[in-house]
Image 1 (cartoon, one colour):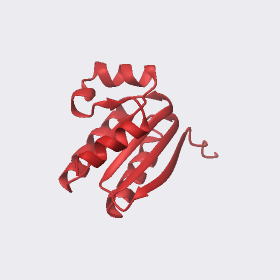
Image 2 (cartoon, helix red, strand yellow):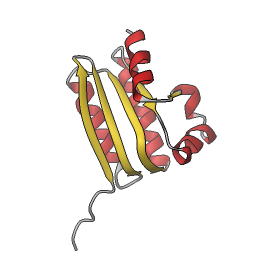
Image 3 (spheres, one colour):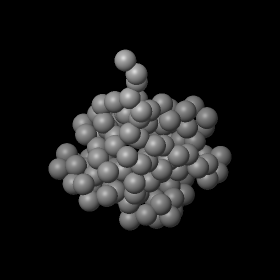
Length: 122
């Protein structure tokens, strides 16, 4: 049986020594959550404690994805950083709002606004 191709794309852009932007595309669910968790962990291990998640291309997210976000926030804050959400689609924003995640990780209108928040948090 062949392994199904991942429905999640994670593109990483390093902004500076302490900040990375991860642009997500596709679906963040039980099958793809480990891919994002690995990418987030790699950024933290490499000293980039401020991570912006560009959600412009994320079409779907389930509870597995929410759990990855919440764990990432705790890990980033534990090392003096944070996770910033940028431009969630309406479907993803609805999940974030319904579950109350927006109170912990408020979404920003775009990547530049999230980067400004990350820069101001230092």
